[in-house]
Image 1 (cartoon, protein in one colour):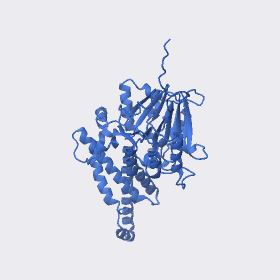
Image 2 (spheres, rainbow, N blue to C red):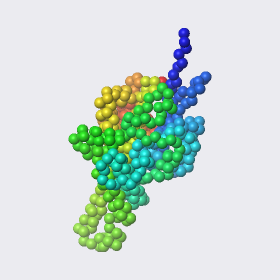
Image 3 (cartoon, protein in one colour):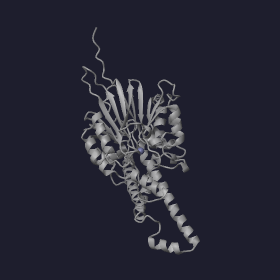
Image 4 (tube, protein in one colour):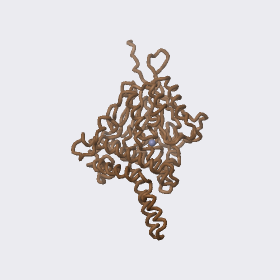
Length: 440
Ligand SMILES: [Zn+2]
């Protein structure tokens, strides 16, 4: 009988969940190596960033370097691919500076980012938008303006003492340009800029594994759903065209406004303090409202960036692993609709491991997505859904307005319906990685 040559496929997946504090860092290893087999294991790093180091390493500047070194050991000096899901500081800061050099030295062949980071879209783009090419440029321009606004807001509010200052400084920091990291990512491997349905460069690298890109949608794709939408405001990408002009104006305004943090210059403030009580009341209200508006704008900006997140679904040996970055509802809506239309929604229903979106914020795990997962169930359930949440409480949002991250009702649901791993709760003396082994 002719000997059938077995097609290479992984026999195990290992997921290392690093505790970066507020941020994401996951090393996914597909094990092919076996005695007598020429196949090597494959290592994919998904995000490496932090806006706030974990306890008890808050004052330990070496923490991220220790993680980079551990990644180097775990992949035996060679990464096959890096995925930077989106350009938020808490996902890419590790690719800058010393830790960026350490990761670059692991020589990833491919660097996967959302199409919105494609340098070819990085042209000045504030002109009226009439064709897809221009729309792409306009989006790039508006993203650039958002980053400038974020930097101005961060500068103006860092070191401030109020809760509002804290929130504004944090959101500003999260959304800044991260030019160092972006430059390093562009140099360390072949860039692949992906979108729903596109190839991502992992296909040939991972025999026996199916990798699907489920997000973000392109402008053209999201325009398709824009026409379905009753409330187009709900669809982030559909709102991009007016947003491009909107953000250009905002960035200019913010650059002027942030030169002095206060609405009123100092001299005027002194006059206001000497003024009648009702004038002081009015001045205070006006300033509070200006801060409220800035917070609203910066929150929206944050959501826009999250919605550029790459969503990846890995399938191997009957197991499905879902890594959605920080994708929020608007990014998900396109994927959910298209998979329903194509009769492929089962791909999501059978997910075994879910990387919780956006550190546990409620709008990054849309209820319609959570409802799809079929492997939810109590602790006694066999083959129960595993969820992984990288987070640090008290950094983002507030309980008072039900925007705290991680959001309590979601955490309760994740705890009761899945096997939840939280990076902020994992007990590891070195504070590095928790290792999840998935036999195939
Ligand atoms: Zn994030």
